[in-house]
Image (cartoon, rainbow, N blue to C red; front, side):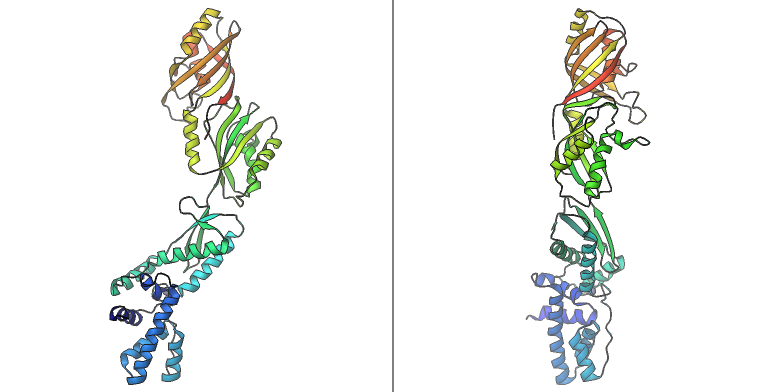
Length: 430
Ligand SMILES: [Zn+2]
């Protein structure tokens, strides 16, 4: 053994009363494979033997002080030696840094975390610690005083201990990017803060009946929304607190959503169960709300799918079928001319007046990709429109008092009103 670390061992043991764990981790990098308390205990054992030999041989004062310091730190053989050979009863002092025995504190923390996570199903976790500033100050003081270059910080030490032990006790793995659960602990005062992250699912929905909103509205029956219907099955099935529905855009309450359906992502908050039979769930929702909504292709998703589904709603073309009432009669020739003008038409839409109260007023440039128009009678049109995501079709028809331009009303120089509207297809998926 070189003189250098030995001197540091002696100095540390004489200057600061540390528990085995806090002592050992000051030398982590010297022996990365060894348990820190085992390391601390071993170094204390070696120091004890040397001090004991010196004390037996020549009763050196320095070695007596070291024996006392070791005894105060709770090192059993030193306590016994001083009591039996010197008649000195030593009281064990709390560790200067952690104020207790870090091993016991951490073992207790693992038991508590395990206990609290027993009732929920999680597959991955991330751990962290929140320690008092006075503890961090004392840790820094030890580091600064002795300038030990092999130490491992207490935070790092706690986190890697928890990662290892929690993985073992709950048979789950760590995931720093998208864990199912995160807990922040303070092992020295028993604080444990657990955050359960949402479970994400995605799929597509078809809306087969008018009068159903996409999300729940305050003061309205939750079962009159796609979100509420899904929640009524999914929340009890997962034991969750609630869920949030994110659609790829939305259709009006009175518009159907047909074809392959509209993509969505569901954020299930604080779920107790995550392993789900998605096919069976899908069936259950569809049976419960037959004739109202239908869910297709339910799959597991991730947090970033929320952003993706929003972008999808903005970008993807949709196919609409509309029935339009006109303020005057039009001829077949006018109809053909109108159809030519509408095909590929670019329009400017200010936020519709009907949603202005909840959305910011801005102008969107949208495109009517293609249109197929037919006369039902002389002043009624049936239209199949392919429009860019986010186009307000009702306003494209009516003009919304000049807020959308050009509009069908403007092109025909008469009033035009969309009396029926359905989305017959959504041309994209996540
Ligand atoms: Zn300690």
